[in-house]
Length: 410
Image (cartoon, rainbow, N blue to C red; front, top):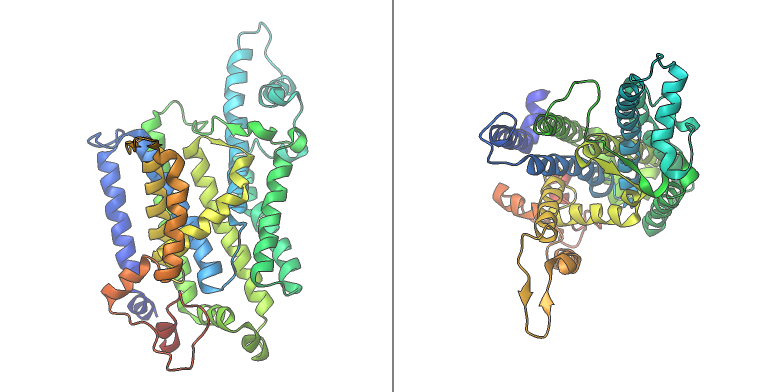
């Protein structure tokens, strides 16, 4: 069984080998353990890119394979980040408060410590008490469970309401975008319990492990991100290579026919939507300790649109395409918006890449959509000898961006 699975998916071993080599290279070049030709900030950037590749995998499964264009998956990503950020900020503030109260002539009581933590965290929004949603912020295991359970439950409820009503196509995309916008606007309020526009900060410091250098912490998180991406890739490749993968591709290509064959289309959609929400949340759990801060702007609908652009440019319907797209676009974004590309004086004006990067990205997306619907991943297909579908007047399905000929013969 394992042999057949790997034989049908040789890209898995290639991907894992490439990821392992990349991880080893970054480790040896880091300031923590290696030759110090890769800065700590770059290690953090690369770790964050691995997390974005993981959420792109989730998007590719739900859109590229199942045909559900969700414009809300970055909301699940950010909610997972908020959940782990609550523990990070609580535990770090607790250390600071305990150290400050240790100077008092009398030992501080647990209630005094808790009140001091609440004042430190919520004083910026004019509050001094913990909201109910912080009830488990003191416990790392419980908060980790919530980091996956809360986005999963949110996706389960939203998906059940949407799919049972048989909302599809652009209408479903609009609903997911509306959900994201509503959640973002709620978190901007100071009484949301998550510090409003200030968000959660200081997340790059991991409490309870002494005082390691940022170089070491960034490398640990980079390793965790690489491991999560590897496990996520193998899991999703296994899912799409079996019966489940055949059913969800059939749902993408002709939902009504699958329903008439007796399959519960809504159940399959709900399972995929919830699973990918949990994967996106896991990516957020690993991303924001490397970013160091999270605020409601991270939930803005534009973030989920970027996610769809990454997958489209990389090549939807291909797991490796999602990884290529996310890594390529985020690296280019970091390069163009980080001041590394010199401005171009035109005489009458100056071309500043920081301002024009989004325009360039938009043109790239339009070009891929019109002229290369298979994305960058289509180049990999050509190297593997995969042909374009020869439909002969009998289309295998409406999705030009997927590997339908290969899927039809498996």
